[in-house]
Image (cartoon, rainbow, N blue to C red; front, top):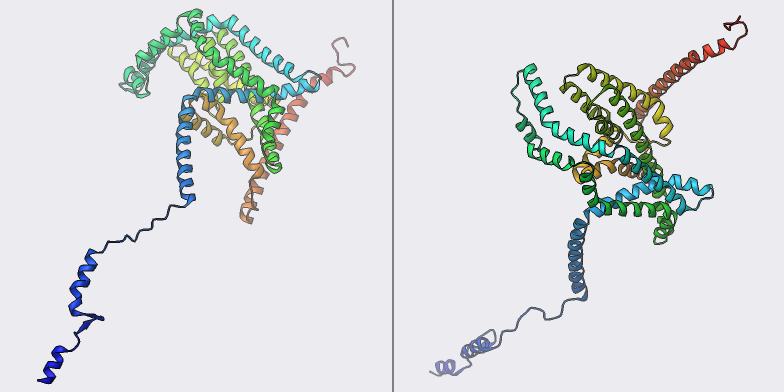
Length: 435
């Protein structure tokens, strides 16, 4: 009994050092105690707030910049045209400056000559150009019908004018509206050009600034750059002037000569719409590489065929081929002092991409822009020595090119010798008609 009583009156059993009798009290205390959060209450670091604000500013600035760039689309086109016109004028202005003419006055002389030539052209041919262009636009449906009838009779097809125009995204109503807009004569032409007058004046102003203050602008921009970057900027500017400037002015001169020559020929053979077709051939053949000549010459040939003049079409085709040879052998080497050295495939692809992205403006400016980029890459890009297999291939290609040049030089010398032979024979005593 004593042992039993001792166990009953002894200390209570414990769980983890806590008596069993105290477990309910501990549980009640744990449940009633406030729950403390393990999450940190420290404020975020300062770089986090700055990062959030910086990201927000970038997003807002990007949205504002995109909106402004979209709204000022025509302004960027005008500025790009003015920049390249200024580059084209800068070599002439530099030459006048070396002769003692102040830069501003020289730029004014060049721009004044350009404006005077344009004004004289429109004063002489403006009414004729608008009238013929309106007649050409009005006659497009008839010309298309005649061409489709000829094709259906020759090839057994069943082509329709409306389906053909819809396939290329043009409707008959669009052609009629264009003809009506252009067909208002000189008054309508002037009324349409009033809307473009401000843009033209703005373009001339920026072109004058780029040409007259070109060195000052170059120094101002270079002063914001470190010395190493200044040399890179100067090289890029010189490449732009040499490549793009020479391209614009040489292509413009060749386009004017080509348009004048084709215009005289078209007028002599009695081709309808000779003036707009001559301008089309002159400018398209010069500013669209590789296929520009064929694309430009195809239109007058097709019109001659459609109006039922196959011999006239053959004459136009022959004249275009002969003129192209004269231009390649005589005019281009004399007018173009520094070529772009741009591959034909790259030039053609740049025109297509520029036209798709930025329309006609992009197509016209694509080649000089790509030429500038290529020149910069070639100047600062890194090249490696070719492996022996590729070196042998390059040497063979260079040898073939030298052989072609030598044959061309030999033919030219032989031709010059034949032309000089009669002159030398006439200068020998005893060969004159009096003897």
